[in-house]
Amino acid sequence: MQQTERSQSESYFWPVVWAVGLHVLMFAMLFVSFAFTPELPPSRPVVQATLYQLQSQSQATTQTTQKVAGEAQKTSAPQFETERLEQKRAEEQKQAQAEAQRQVAAKKAEEQKQAEEARKAEQAKAEAAKKAEAEKAAEQ
Image (cartoon, rainbow, N blue to C red; front, side, top):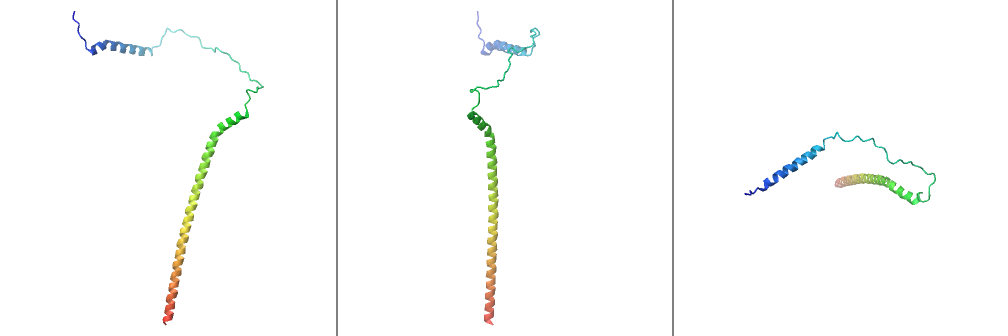
C-alpha cells in the first residue's frame, strides 16, 4: 500500500465545503415558513388583578416634609439652572453697558482735552497778538 501525502490545502477542502454548505442551509432555513406548525389559540391574560385605592394612609406611607423638600429640590434644579443662565446674561448685559459707558466717557474726556488744548492755543495766539500790538505801539 502506498500512502500519498496530501498537501495541507487538500486536507481542508472537504471540511470547508461541508461547513459552508451547512451555513448556507441554516441561513436559508431562516426564511422558510413551516406549514406544519400547529395553530395556536389567541393568548389570554394569565393574571387578573383588581386595583383598590385606600382612603386612609398609614403613617409609614405618608410623605414626610423632608421627602417633600427633597423632591422639591430635585424638581427645582432645572429652574435653578435657567435662573443662573438668566443672571449670567443679565451680568453680561450690565458689563457690556458699563463698557459702552466707559467708552463714551473716554470719548468725552478726549473731546474735552482737545477743546482745552484748542482754547489754550487761542489764548496763546491772543497773548502773542497783544504783545505784538504793544510792541508796535511802543515803537511809534
